[in-house]
Image (tube, rainbow, N blue to C red; front, side, top):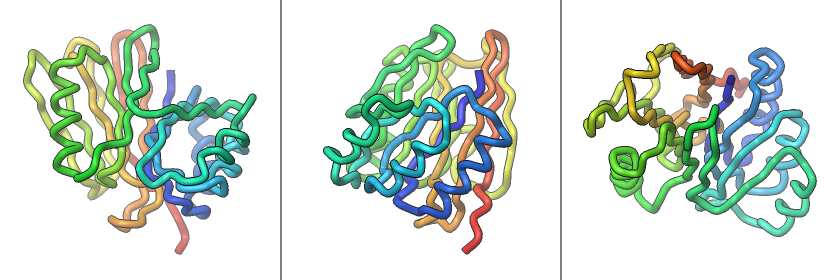
Length: 199
């Protein structure tokens, strides 16, 4: 299974349109969106991607009634956080985040250590994070984005994998990013990439 993971598109139409190129090249089986679409303008463009999108609401999302009308009977579903999904038969959690960056980090860490999910996807902080939990220990593999990098992990190397793809909009960090995950029964590969957005 190949997943495209994004968050915090924040109505950056140029960035959202660039996701069309990513979908055409990467051909993901599905996309996970960790919230903050902002408005129906973003949703109208996401509808054109032609891929199943599993999302949660972010703290800045407005006009939810119109958004829900737009996605009715479409390949996009958006629910309140936390949202549970199954990834290759294993439990995964999608959240946006809560209030401050530090509170979000604490909540994610607590969920990762104690809640029994194989994968946790989150956003809100606008910062890339890739971490794992193994044997109750939380280990950060990457926090922040400096360059594109690929991680490959054996399935027995982690109990829970935590991924924040950063901000697709680039609105706060200046680095619009996304992640591609290739998942098999024995290996997980995560590529954290820059979304090439012309300014």
